[in-house]
Amino acid sequence: MKRLSMLMLAALSAVLLFVVCDDNDDTIPDGAVRLGGCNIVTAKALAETASVPKSDTTIVSVSSRYVNVFVGRYMGCLLKFKAWHEIADDVLYMHLTGKPDYDPDEVGLACICYYTFDFTFEKQGVLNREYKILLNLPWFEGIISEGVIPGASGSNTGNNENTGVCGSGTHFNPNINYGSFTDSRDGQCYRTVEIGNLTWMAENLNYKTANDWDSRCYGDDDSNCTVYGRLYTHEIITSVCPSGWRLPTGEDWNDLAQTVGGSSGAGTRLKSKTGWDGTDDYGFSALPGGGRFHNNVGLDPFIEAGKSAYWYSTERLSIMKMETGSERLVDYGLVSTSYAHYVRCVRH
Image 1: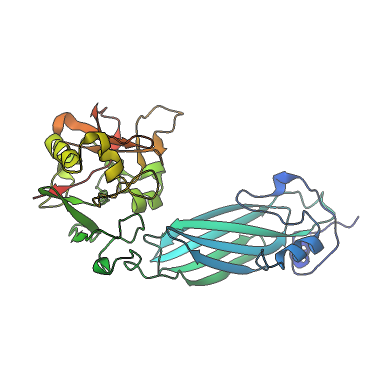
Image 2 (image 1 turned 180 degrees about the horizontal axis):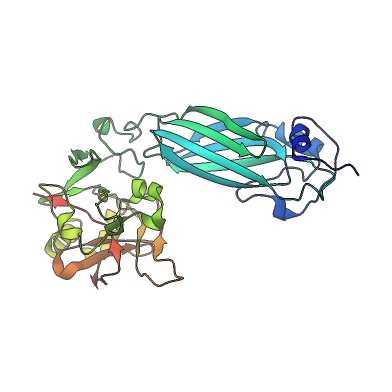
């Protein structure tokens, strides 16, 4: 059996062959699908059906909330991949880094299989952004696809009165006439909404403090800050709101609950319609961003995203809570100094 060098494996990836290789599922990278096992004819046939995009294609689709980027490639199937993304110089880079999952001195035959990769992003911060997909293999490194994510930021609210208002997340209520505010400290723009006698930010604060520990993204993933805002420690919360804004008091939260019909149903009426079980009747548009609860070694401190959300008040440094399956807005009580939660700023 003739042994193939890395160079010969690269050459194989450009031609169609009937070959045999190990069909072990361990050769399939996370987040990828190998079509047709190691039979290139089957893989090619599947790739050419109406339901499966052809090879070496990129498909960008925009749904009501997400942007999905599909990447299809024919590549040697004895590879393992790491897929990751970053935003640099205002460009969304999607990286596919592959390495051989074999010893070239022990493998005599290789095959070519069809891999698919899916990158999914929240719309906010991605629409109209330039993207590049980079493939990095031992024998090849370069851009395999580039373009612009379609869509118009600020115009997907479904409400002409809100066209141009900052904040492009589709979780906002299109029937609410939001205001807007730009934080002079970093240029970030927030939607605002009047409820009762106060103007509330209609999204969580996302101001990055000088000390990274005091303001973190859920899971330490920057994309979560775009969606949920930042999680702040109790040491910083009394000074983190922009000039002219302040942290809400316990009385402010109570007035909010009473204005929307009482605390027993306030949770439902203040939650966004997307992400959990809310009606968002007043444009508060709360999302289930979870929180950071402990610093114990070996335990994930970031929990409950998709299930609950917590906000600070000045009253005894307590936090207010909403959770999936509950209609209530609850005063959760005192917080530990090791916890970190979200901030909604208010002004008169």
